[in-house]
Image (cartoon, rainbow, N blue to C red):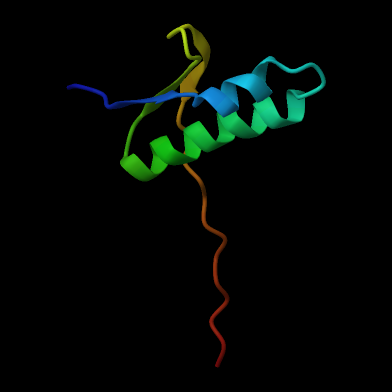
Length: 73
């Protein structure tokens, strides 16, 4: 059975930010964006590439658990 892999390549502006010092929080957010997009596309894994097609991050897409909604009577 084939697994769908979502691939995301940074834009030029995103690459500039990725390369800046002190942007670890932003980098973590970009990894999260790639994973969220992969989840929406129904992929099982994601890969984040830089402009030179080098892998910056990859991983499995985690399933989000929806909180139970309490029924009101």
